[in-house]
Image (tube, rainbow, N blue to C red; front, top):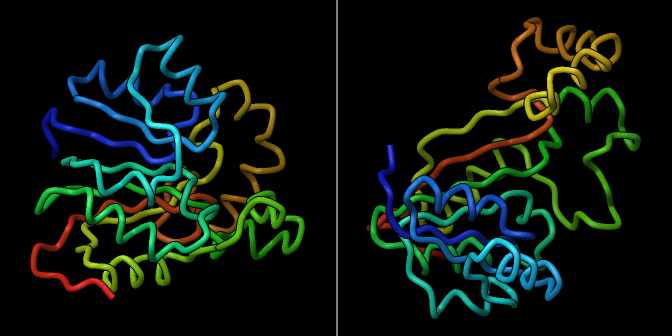
Length: 201
Protein backbone atom coordinates (compact mmCIF):
# COMPACT_ATOMS: atom_id res chain seq x y z
CA UNK A 1 0.00 0.00 0.00
CA UNK A 2 1.32 3.43 -0.99
CA UNK A 3 0.20 6.49 0.92
CA UNK A 4 -0.08 9.92 -0.71
CA UNK A 5 3.32 10.91 -2.05
CA UNK A 6 4.94 12.20 -5.24
CA UNK A 7 3.67 10.54 -8.42
CA UNK A 8 4.86 10.90 -12.02
CA UNK A 9 2.84 9.57 -14.93
CA UNK A 10 4.74 8.89 -18.15
CA UNK A 11 2.54 9.31 -21.19
CA UNK A 12 -0.21 11.10 -19.28
CA UNK A 13 -2.27 12.05 -22.38
CA UNK A 14 -4.98 14.54 -21.33
CA UNK A 15 -4.18 14.26 -17.63
CA UNK A 16 -7.28 12.51 -16.29
CA UNK A 17 -5.37 9.94 -14.25
CA UNK A 18 -3.21 12.72 -12.81
CA UNK A 19 -6.34 14.61 -11.84
CA UNK A 20 -7.69 11.54 -10.03
CA UNK A 21 -4.33 10.89 -8.32
CA UNK A 22 -4.16 14.49 -7.16
CA UNK A 23 -7.67 14.11 -5.74
CA UNK A 24 -6.40 11.09 -3.78
CA UNK A 25 -3.71 13.23 -2.18
CA UNK A 26 -0.70 12.67 -4.43
CA UNK A 27 1.57 15.45 -5.61
CA UNK A 28 1.55 14.83 -9.34
CA UNK A 29 3.51 15.61 -12.48
CA UNK A 30 2.89 14.27 -15.96
CA UNK A 31 5.11 13.82 -18.99
CA UNK A 32 3.48 13.77 -22.41
CA UNK A 33 4.96 13.87 -25.89
CA UNK A 34 1.84 15.40 -27.50
CA UNK A 35 1.78 19.19 -27.23
CA UNK A 36 -2.00 19.23 -27.67
CA UNK A 37 -2.64 16.67 -24.92
CA UNK A 38 -0.15 18.30 -22.56
CA UNK A 39 -1.74 21.71 -23.10
CA UNK A 40 -5.21 20.28 -22.43
CA UNK A 41 -4.05 18.76 -19.13
CA UNK A 42 -2.53 22.04 -18.00
CA UNK A 43 -5.19 24.43 -19.29
CA UNK A 44 -8.37 22.44 -18.59
CA UNK A 45 -7.48 20.20 -15.64
CA UNK A 46 -4.83 22.34 -14.00
CA UNK A 47 -2.35 19.51 -13.58
CA UNK A 48 1.38 20.09 -14.16
CA UNK A 49 2.67 18.37 -17.29
CA UNK A 50 6.10 18.47 -18.91
CA UNK A 51 5.91 18.20 -22.69
CA UNK A 52 8.51 15.86 -24.15
CA UNK A 53 9.80 12.31 -24.08
CA UNK A 54 9.91 10.71 -20.65
CA UNK A 55 13.43 9.35 -21.14
CA UNK A 56 14.70 12.88 -21.80
CA UNK A 57 12.77 14.57 -19.01
CA UNK A 58 13.49 11.87 -16.41
CA UNK A 59 16.82 13.26 -15.09
CA UNK A 60 15.00 16.33 -13.78
CA UNK A 61 12.29 14.36 -11.96
CA UNK A 62 12.09 12.61 -8.60
CA UNK A 63 9.11 10.58 -7.39
CA UNK A 64 7.91 7.82 -5.10
CA UNK A 65 5.63 6.37 -7.78
CA UNK A 66 5.95 6.19 -11.58
CA UNK A 67 2.95 5.05 -13.63
CA UNK A 68 2.89 4.21 -17.33
CA UNK A 69 -0.39 2.96 -18.74
CA UNK A 70 -0.06 1.62 -22.29
CA UNK A 71 3.22 3.40 -22.92
CA UNK A 72 5.93 0.73 -22.93
CA UNK A 73 4.69 -0.88 -26.14
CA UNK A 74 5.16 2.44 -27.97
CA UNK A 75 8.67 3.50 -26.94
CA UNK A 76 11.86 3.17 -28.97
CA UNK A 77 13.73 1.17 -26.32
CA UNK A 78 11.79 -0.43 -23.42
CA UNK A 79 14.93 -1.06 -21.38
CA UNK A 80 15.98 2.58 -21.68
CA UNK A 81 12.50 3.62 -20.57
CA UNK A 82 12.63 1.33 -17.52
CA UNK A 83 16.10 2.57 -16.59
CA UNK A 84 14.78 6.13 -16.80
CA UNK A 85 11.86 5.19 -14.52
CA UNK A 86 14.28 3.69 -12.03
CA UNK A 87 16.34 6.89 -12.13
CA UNK A 88 13.24 8.92 -11.27
CA UNK A 89 12.22 6.71 -8.34
CA UNK A 90 13.36 7.09 -4.78
CA UNK A 91 14.84 3.90 -3.23
CA UNK A 92 12.01 1.45 -2.76
CA UNK A 93 9.74 3.54 -5.01
CA UNK A 94 6.93 1.93 -6.98
CA UNK A 95 6.51 1.40 -10.72
CA UNK A 96 3.05 0.56 -12.09
CA UNK A 97 2.68 -0.60 -15.70
CA UNK A 98 -0.08 -1.83 -17.97
CA UNK A 99 0.50 -3.15 -21.50
CA UNK A 100 -1.31 -5.46 -23.94
CA UNK A 101 -0.70 -9.12 -23.17
CA UNK A 102 0.37 -10.98 -26.29
CA UNK A 103 0.12 -14.23 -24.32
CA UNK A 104 -3.62 -13.62 -23.84
CA UNK A 105 -6.26 -16.11 -24.80
CA UNK A 106 -7.68 -13.61 -27.30
CA UNK A 107 -4.30 -13.15 -28.98
CA UNK A 108 -3.96 -16.89 -29.44
CA UNK A 109 -7.55 -17.18 -30.66
CA UNK A 110 -7.56 -14.21 -33.07
CA UNK A 111 -3.96 -14.18 -34.31
CA UNK A 112 -3.37 -11.21 -36.63
CA UNK A 113 -6.92 -10.07 -35.92
CA UNK A 114 -6.23 -9.48 -32.23
CA UNK A 115 -7.14 -5.82 -31.48
CA UNK A 116 -4.13 -5.39 -29.21
CA UNK A 117 -1.65 -6.13 -31.98
CA UNK A 118 -1.81 -2.72 -33.75
CA UNK A 119 1.54 -3.00 -35.57
CA UNK A 120 1.24 0.56 -36.86
CA UNK A 121 1.41 1.84 -33.26
CA UNK A 122 2.86 -0.91 -31.05
CA UNK A 123 6.57 -1.46 -31.51
CA UNK A 124 6.86 -4.12 -28.81
CA UNK A 125 4.75 -6.82 -27.22
CA UNK A 126 5.14 -8.51 -23.87
CA UNK A 127 4.11 -11.62 -22.01
CA UNK A 128 4.10 -11.88 -18.21
CA UNK A 129 7.41 -13.77 -18.41
CA UNK A 130 9.21 -11.35 -20.74
CA UNK A 131 8.08 -8.18 -18.97
CA UNK A 132 8.86 -9.39 -15.46
CA UNK A 133 12.28 -10.60 -16.65
CA UNK A 134 13.03 -7.22 -18.22
CA UNK A 135 12.03 -5.45 -15.02
CA UNK A 136 14.39 -7.58 -12.96
CA UNK A 137 17.18 -6.95 -15.47
CA UNK A 138 16.72 -3.20 -15.15
CA UNK A 139 16.86 -3.05 -11.36
CA UNK A 140 13.31 -3.70 -10.18
CA UNK A 141 11.78 -6.18 -7.79
CA UNK A 142 8.52 -7.49 -9.24
CA UNK A 143 5.98 -7.43 -6.41
CA UNK A 144 2.89 -8.63 -8.27
CA UNK A 145 1.37 -9.03 -11.69
CA UNK A 146 -1.88 -10.23 -13.17
CA UNK A 147 -3.95 -9.85 -16.31
CA UNK A 148 -7.47 -8.61 -16.92
CA UNK A 149 -9.86 -9.15 -19.78
CA UNK A 150 -10.74 -6.01 -21.71
CA UNK A 151 -14.29 -6.03 -20.34
CA UNK A 152 -12.80 -5.25 -16.91
CA UNK A 153 -12.78 -1.55 -17.89
CA UNK A 154 -16.12 -1.48 -19.68
CA UNK A 155 -19.36 -0.03 -18.40
CA UNK A 156 -21.96 -2.65 -17.37
CA UNK A 157 -24.15 -2.11 -20.43
CA UNK A 158 -21.20 -2.57 -22.76
CA UNK A 159 -20.39 -5.85 -21.01
CA UNK A 160 -23.94 -7.02 -21.57
CA UNK A 161 -23.90 -6.08 -25.26
CA UNK A 162 -20.71 -8.08 -25.81
CA UNK A 163 -21.62 -10.99 -23.53
CA UNK A 164 -22.49 -13.42 -26.29
CA UNK A 165 -19.15 -13.00 -28.06
CA UNK A 166 -16.43 -11.92 -25.66
CA UNK A 167 -17.75 -13.28 -22.37
CA UNK A 168 -18.32 -16.74 -23.79
CA UNK A 169 -14.88 -16.78 -25.40
CA UNK A 170 -13.19 -15.49 -22.24
CA UNK A 171 -14.92 -18.02 -20.01
CA UNK A 172 -14.09 -20.83 -22.41
CA UNK A 173 -10.42 -19.84 -22.38
CA UNK A 174 -10.01 -19.16 -18.67
CA UNK A 175 -12.65 -21.60 -17.35
CA UNK A 176 -13.90 -18.83 -15.11
CA UNK A 177 -16.35 -15.91 -15.42
CA UNK A 178 -13.96 -13.64 -13.52
CA UNK A 179 -12.45 -10.62 -15.26
CA UNK A 180 -8.97 -11.27 -13.83
CA UNK A 181 -6.65 -14.13 -14.71
CA UNK A 182 -3.01 -14.84 -13.79
CA UNK A 183 -1.92 -15.16 -17.43
CA UNK A 184 -4.65 -15.17 -20.08
CA UNK A 185 -6.31 -11.73 -19.88
CA UNK A 186 -5.99 -9.10 -22.61
CA UNK A 187 -4.05 -6.60 -20.50
CA UNK A 188 -0.98 -7.24 -18.36
CA UNK A 189 -0.57 -5.23 -15.14
CA UNK A 190 2.66 -5.20 -13.14
CA UNK A 191 3.63 -3.57 -9.85
CA UNK A 192 7.35 -3.40 -9.13
CA UNK A 193 9.67 -1.59 -6.74
CA UNK A 194 13.02 -0.02 -7.35
CA UNK A 195 15.54 -2.51 -6.04
CA UNK A 196 18.02 -0.45 -4.06
CA UNK A 197 20.66 -3.14 -4.54
CA UNK A 198 19.80 -3.84 -8.18
CA UNK A 199 22.31 -3.18 -10.93
CA UNK A 200 20.81 -1.97 -14.19
CA UNK A 201 22.14 -3.33 -17.45
